[in-house]
Amino acid sequence: SQQGEEDPQALSIQEGENATMNCSYKTSINNLQWYRQNSGRGLVHLILIRSNEREKHSGRLRVTLDTSKKSSSLLITASRAADTASYFCATVPPQGGSEKLVFGKGTKLTVNP
Amino acid sequence: DSGVTQTPKHLITATGQRVTLRCSPRSGDLSVYWYQQSLDQGLQFLIQYYNGEERAKGNILERFSAQQFPDLHSELNLSSLELGDSALYFCASSQFGGNSPLHFGNGTRLTVT
Image (cartoon, rainbow over all chains, first blue to last red; front, side):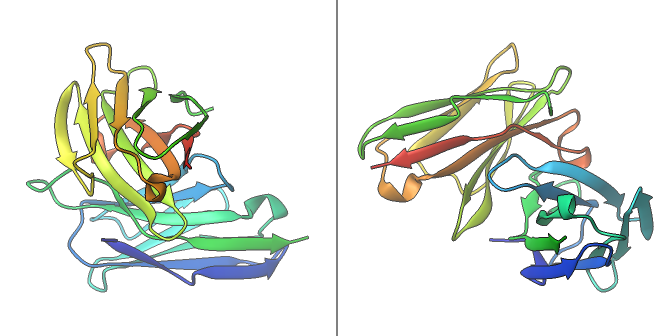
């Protein structure tokens, strides 16, 4: 079963616009990670945010985490056609449980030139 | 390039057969994960090894088995294959398990006919 669920399932925007994707999860977490997957390729790690962090930046990416709402968002600013990909959130349950990283079903982002 | 190598890239086989997928983790990574990705089920966690020992188990069928060898490479064995086993199988590695980023290989695309 999925721990995280991304929303929306699909998103289509124009180049230059911002893209926001959301992730909700069910149980408490140690950290939450975002990954990108280009069609048929392996996933690429984007950002890891720990449960005691609220916001993290990496280049044009901004991730927020709200543990009280069990949700996270990924913002891509000034999007480019090359950002077209599927984006996944993944969570790790707290220590004492397993170390498995559980992925959601992803948001498919299309950036139109 | 993630540094994770998966072989073979493509595999076509018949129902009832057995196959072995191979993964070489990134240099220095002790943990190996296996995931199955299909269109309808998303990215499903199968199993994780850390330094040769099984650390976490997910939705792995009894027909599937895996191991991590002393040189840290890992193999996923799939037997009595069914049509529904057709999927992309990803291997990923990390330094410290689920609390560090995963580095994914480009996957093995298995087609069962």
